[in-house]
Length: 278
Image 1 (cartoon, rainbow, N blue to C red):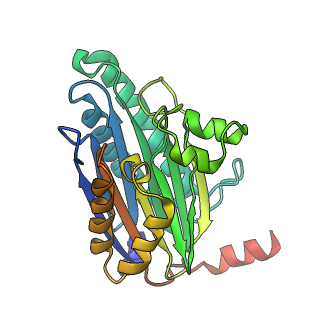
Image 2 (tube, rainbow, N blue to C red; image 1 turned 90 degrees about the vertical axis):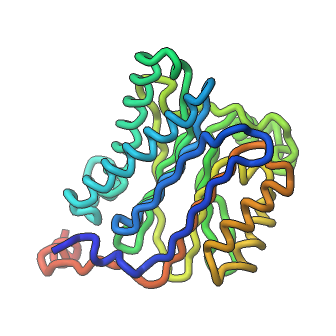
């Protein structure tokens, strides 16, 4: 049986990426796999066209490896060592592998020297979402009327907020937002932050590059999703328009997923008994 069959028809997806008003070319990369219920977004950086090389490697590698791993593994099993779902480990390991490939490419190709990329990726399975992120690309969730940021930026500014040097409001106004403390491809290994959340029908998940979050306040993002949520494509277009109307100083990428129905995995009798008596 195709393990992914349970995911079909359970989500609506939309994605859009735009160069913005200032940059000459787009160094963001995005990819959605409906069969695996996976979204990957990368915001590249580096000289010449190297940023788009890094982000392209990240999206392709993570999409392929995570999709392969998802078919191979029982994704709703919990790993006894880490306490994480197998699916989350598959996603984390795919991100770590992409880091290695980007780093090796940067070392071996002169024109790619110094390149890197931020990354946020999401996979859905068994009424849960696994998130992996590195840098300041973000994931948000709208549930009922509550809109919240699920990832915390790996940035100098966020560290200063965490240590009490800045308030959240002061950070919003800061012009020094873009110094990331973690990125793919910069070092031989990277610390990938992973999280797991329960999912409910009606949830809307947003992945975005900092081209959106730096240009548009969270409450305006929330209002846009709430206003146009009859069509995720329109939500994406409106968010990009807002970012560009506010200056469009960076490439802007938006990925959206709306949960249409429960996608719980039917557990076997043996696994049900194990969970009852284990």
